[in-house]
Image (tube, rainbow, N blue to C red; front, side):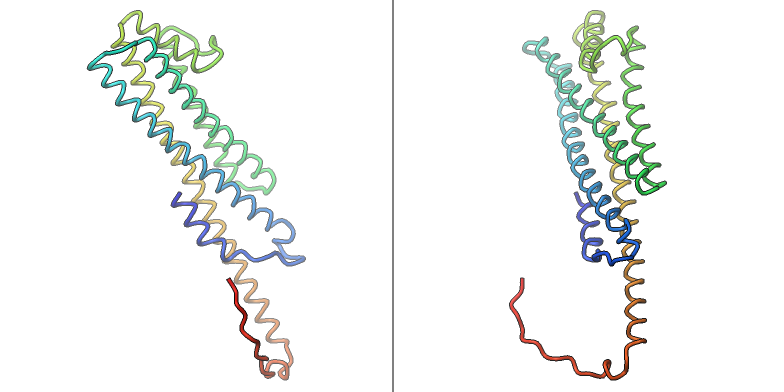
Length: 243
């Protein structure tokens, strides 16, 4: 949240309306608007990931407590943990896939190599996140492709370990999955922050260039203005109440 607030404070006041025939008038303004939209979208995803991380840390504590003091209906407890972890996993993957698509579209529309690079990074994160579950399934003698969803795969993996090693074995498996997912969500959030900083830096530099161009245009106008007009007094205006 701090990242986007800093970007908006630094960039928004310096954004000027595009002049006819200017670079902004031929696409620069659209590019700036799209970047700001992307920053806001990424910020909402960063907040979601922070919520996911808090949930995963709660699950970590729950799993440790259950391992030390098993209680209640363990079948229901396992189902709840599996469902929640699958939901977080799916949500994180959706964020990674959406960020990949957004950056791909931006790179294609504005020929941005930076956006293309981030698209590759988000695609790599999504693939790596999926490979983690696949590897755990393989170690347990199963194939992720044989299940329709991550939740079904997680349930099969936990049940397999529970059958062979009891509740403690199943809780250990859930703990490993939870820890891996927590690390992946932190990596994804860091990647989003990196993109926001890169976008903010680009906008700041672009606006600085635009201000320099406007200053040069004003100086040229002043140099060509007749001396008589320059020396004319500025008429006084009555003060008006404004916001």
